[in-house]
Image 1 (cartoon, rainbow, N blue to C red):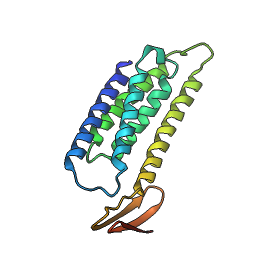
Image 2: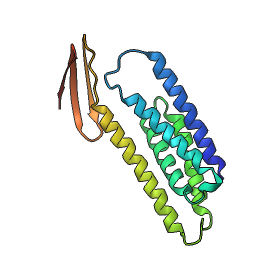
Image 3: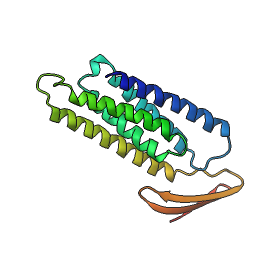
Length: 176
């Protein structure tokens, strides 16, 4: 069922391209300028992991690659459910189906067990979740103020609580 990895990769790559196209066409100034590049890079990484899992030579690493891809796509799909989330959820489900199939296969190579494959899949899932949450947290407070003009905003960080920021002629003020 290596086609599940290919399907997840194709869907994720298509969503990534459309996401960048739509966000790029909107223009405007974004104070949190690192958020879009991070999300695009994360989706691309999930697509690459899913695509690599479909290679015959990746049999040993398939649980890890599909664990990363399934967890990352499902979590980001949930977070972005009202914009790009639905196709990401579909890609995540495909990756999860591929993972379930890979886990049900007999031992991949001599000396490996189902427990090792499960540990690799779980480790990959945890890694994807940590990368996504850390990336959101770090890009949340990477704020760029324009040299002239004013603006502001605020929000609730995943790990840091709520905050407010204002930009006034290049000067940034953040309050928690």
